[in-house]
Length: 527
Image (cartoon, rainbow, N blue to C red):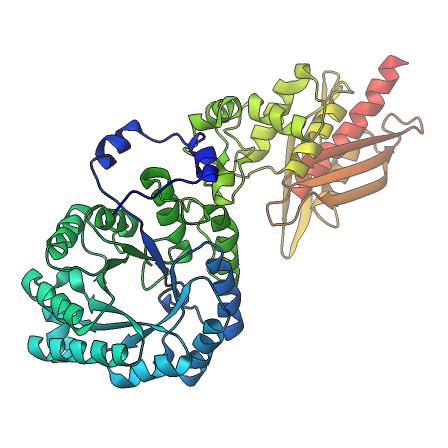
């Protein structure tokens, strides 16, 4: 086969791809032609534990997957129920660009169900490994070949396009495997599939197996790789390098047990390393989210290509590099696969990434106060929290606010004890211009106890005029912003405001009250 030609749009992306130069030293010696994809998200993917898709779910997912440009969609197992057969029928009538396929065991009844569904493509299978023959099928090798041949001939006689699989092929003796495939090829099968049913082969062995079968099998050959040892994608690539023509994939790597070769990883890898540009990989991100929503399976944060962290950067060193040239820490741009870059603000972030985020939000933050802002960010993020745009804006504003007042009254110690059937009690120690005062007070709640203790340590006549608490964002780890208005910090009837941002409501309330006290003291100094 000739090498797949690269389109003009692909050439545009090619200029932004930066992978290892050693790849082409190896791949240049390979003769990989046009590779087809068979998507089995709606069949093998649905067999993931806990997934049960309705007809409407499957229709929405099939339409989305079809936009990627896969060659075949295996959308179900028509013989399993009348409901499943009807779902296959509905998808077959959608008019998708991809051919619609149904799975079938090697029986006439299963093939009849596919015919009745209106699908014109059947994927029929029978196990061939000795362990399956002995413990599952309880058939001889000759009986299995006879059953396989009879089913292929029956399907072909009814006008179906036939793909045939030797279940557990990678644990089947090579001579017998070759014999089965030759028999179904002669019976009229259009394509044969080599499944690594329990995900136990390694890439070099897969390459060897496909290469050996290719010596005798003339019709196209597919592979169906499971991910039990994390090698499904690598085994799929090894197979096409050895002469396989089609890869079975699932969106988000769904499938039995640890899943199948992941569509997003396979399609992206085919483009980046093999120059195969027949799939619209810009749809991978959106389709991944659609499948996640309808299956209820969350996408792992660290999932390659489509995971939340696939293009996220937090470390200051990494962010600095990415902002100067994304290729420093990205092999390809996120837009190429329908994703977006995320510069995360956390405890490992550097000033460059924070400044870049502030600039993007049109927040003009003074360079002189960046060290204080970074200290505030790292204090809030030390527990592993990522800080989003809204929270960053509030932290920056709070840092500027605090910078307007001198710390005349310093909170040296603060402890609060609370719990069920426990009277909330707070103890504070403050330093007022060199003089330390300590006070312990109870209250109706921890915040009330803290306010009472501060009042006792600073000025008994302080009154709390207003306290407003607001969660910056949703979630249990949301930052909160507390704004307070107090009166009589220095027993003169003046009102002053304070606010603070933090993760803990009590601590943040105390910080806001201390800020209000210090703003009152600062204003008197200016007078």
